[in-house]
Amino acid sequence: MTRYLPLLLNLLRAFNAISFVLVAILHFRERRQPRSIWGGGAYRALVVALAVLYLDVLGEELAQATLGRSGSFLLLIDDLLSMLLPAMVFHTYYCGERPYLRAHGVWRAVLAAAYISGLIAGIGGAGVVTGLWHTRIPKAAFGMPSITCAVLGVVGLLWASRRLASDPRERNHRRWVLGLSVAWGVVALAQELHWTIGVGIVLNSAPLIFLFIVTYYVERFTFFDVLLKKAAFAFASLLSLTLYFVFVTPFIWALRLHGWFGPVVWGVSVWPIILLAPWGHRTVSRWLDRLWLGRRFSPAQASEYFFAGVQGAIGERELARSAEQRLGTIFRSEAEVSLMPEPPAAALDRGNSIQAPLRLRGEPIGWICLRASADHPRLLSEDVELLASLAKGLSFLLENLRLREKRLEQEKRERELVLNANRSELKALRAQVNPHFLFNALNAIAGLIPEDPDRAERTIEQLAEVFRYTLRGSDREWVLLSDELDAVRAYLDIEQARFRERLRVRIECSEEAKGFRIPAMTVQTVVENAIKHGVAAIREPGVVEIEASVAHSALCIAVRDNGPGFEEARQPKPDNGGGFGLRNVRERLEGHFGGAARLSIGRDTGRGLTVVSIEMPAAAGWQRVEA
Image (cartoon, rainbow, N blue to C red; front, side, top):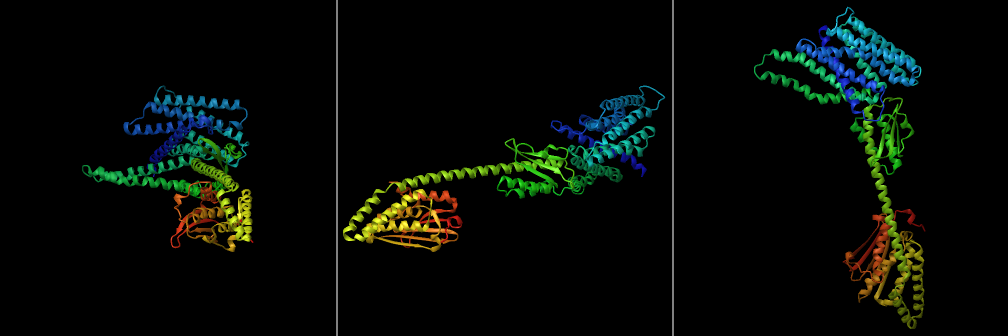
């Protein structure tokens, strides 16, 4: 078993190199973001130093394996960084804990002593190793003061600031770091006194534990979860390839395959590892998400769940409430959606919350804020990326909702303008007396006076009723269907006095239909059109039929006449105001009911009648008046 310890040590060094290089790259990518990280520049410098150190150590191993010796330059970097690392760790914690410390001059003096001793130790140890000078002082003596000074500084610093930490997680973090610092220092001193592979394995594990503690407890936006997934996958793949080369490759070469067949067999044997790599990455990510990080949704599932719950919102407040519920379920946190440009108060607590702006054409119009709850206390970097993605989608939905509301408001204003125009037009039509109708009515009355005085008197009363209804209707938009039909009967009685036997009238209206309100002059206008363009245009007896009923939640009114008829696309031209009648009725119906009401013109070919049909909703209870 002990023969595999060097292999394990090199695997651990490779894993450390991958991890710290990833963190260094992630910090480099975030350098332009206006976000302060724990430890500031000292933490970034420490990460870069550890990445360089482990790459240097791997370079030493590679040079030793290929050339039989390590280069002086690699050894110099190794000794210098190894001796400076304790001081850099102390510097990082000093920068992170500085707001909680007093007597900053003392701590800066201790920090300077740690750096000076580390620099002297690094130069001295490198000189001994590279042979620049000869001394009887063992190499270990150079590193002990630096390590001791740094360890005591970290322990004292954490102890001094520990009593100021009120957050339980912060106290837990300091306990971990305190124990790790002491253990790290003890193992580092043990390595200086007597190096073994076991001590080397423990010592190379400490920086990785330090990185995970810092990122998990303090600097979660260092992409801890991404780092963990990538590093875990890198370690698993590295371990798989190492085991393959250690155990499988010697067996393949032992077969002594001739020619090109050996490399082909070797390539085919390694192919399954390459094919399984994507599946392994997904499996590791899913396992870490569910079992360690506590995520219930993958990013794709979270997006589908979120947008399925907010798409049906019909108002901004409903959209915000639905988004808060879905976000709380996805992140297991307290969610707040604010539709104000200024960030909410919860967004100011950046230590335990994440935020994402809602933007419209680049300008903030709202905010999403998540606060970690007790049962899910950690919001990590993938949560930040997922929240940013959901915020973009929510911004798009909010923009569409506002555009839809703006369009509906514009359509409403347009309908009101049309209605106002139609009302004005209708008032003008009502206010003016049709000279032909009045002339014909007076002629009919004059002819009835010597023949049928009673009928003449009744016709005069009906004429007065028609004009009274017309003028009274100028001040109101809605009338009962029964009142409208009474005016229509009066109008048709006058026309019968004019046409005598040439006009037959039939009016049928159900009791249910009489109680509904309709736009004033709707039926009157259609009947006038039937007389003028229908009955008056033929020589044979004319017929006018009016039917009103309620069917299938709609009020149906049909006006028939046996005139010559016309196609809907060839309606009468507007002369003397009469040609505007049907168009006015149609536009008023559309203004009041939209597409739910319609006026249609057809032909009953079996009976030879022109039919003008009106349908309007009868389900609107405010239009109906109970008897």
